[in-house]
Image (cartoon, rainbow, N blue to C red; front, side):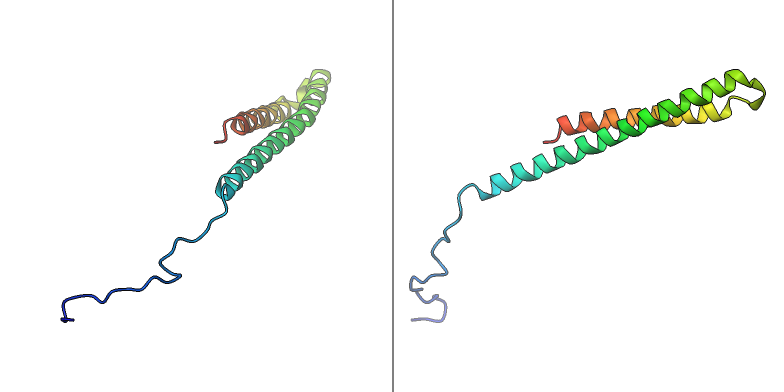
Length: 101
């Protein structure tokens, strides 16, 4: 055998293809996707519950403003805008849960 020729390899275990479990990757991918969907859905529901609590507080601040307008409308405006922000976050998170791929 000359120095430029590679020696012939005998068949061994390393050159044979390894056996794989069929469908494990697809199942893990599907499970991960479902977990992300549930996570986004739960976060969206949490935001909407917090927005409902904010709506009740906003209503009570509005009633307080109507009874005593000298106090100003700032507390109501801040609570109402925060409640609106929570609603936006909740709706966005639920929409994201429906579109996870």
